[in-house]
Length: 360
Image 1: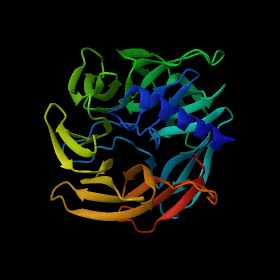
Image 2: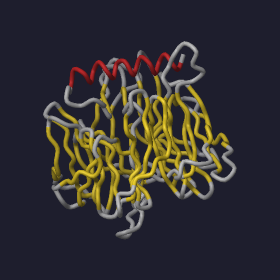
Image 3: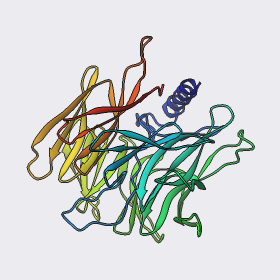
């Protein structure tokens, strides 16, 4: 059963990560002996850059909206939802993939990560594309976290053999290829990259290792990488870029830093960063048995409550006045589902559950 498979991967992730890095509570990516146990607990939140914005305007690290539609995935299916009618339509169902994530929509194409499942608890990630009408589907390369930037796909490359799932799945490094999957080129060799974003011809990426967690940048053409900050005591995650600032979680707090600086400034305490859009920071706070979603205006720090969720929020993407988010529910014997895709306005109104499903 799908639910049992995901549960086994989740347990394996906890065990591996507890042994590997005690200072970090959420692994963005962990290799297993049989395949890839990828994703943070809510799935990898990886950024798809469509190009640079002018200073002061909104830079969207992920674009899942095209026209009146926002795109999302549930297991091996990709859907689009009309933001006006709130009606979802099935776009594509995979015959070989197990899980789609990291969606980005560009010029009539959907680019994403497709995990194939084979063997015992083995997930094998591929860079995948399909037209928004569901046609011309194609797996491009072994890897994950596609970033669409200036006519190319930047991604984290993997090396594995699906015919022999006892071999370790290895991260090779940061690579770049054309939108058709050709001209594959290495930007940076590394086996511990877990998240990335691109802005003004620089790749910002996170590295987890036994020595700690650090944020780096490197030119999109390659060359020497630069360490910005980090240490062995706190984890870095959730890279978002807005108006020449990079926002991120550092431990349990949200920080920001100029894109060319090594000095960081705390923005919000005891919060988890979800998105930055149209002059607002979207974030969650933790209660006893629930989380609350807020937005804070960057200009004057005015905070607005949006939604409360029993248990926790997953990915939250804000575009064009709408929020598409994943909700998680505490699993018990009477649960009909433990996850859902949800759409609402940025003020929290006119919300609708789009799809419900099991994850754990």
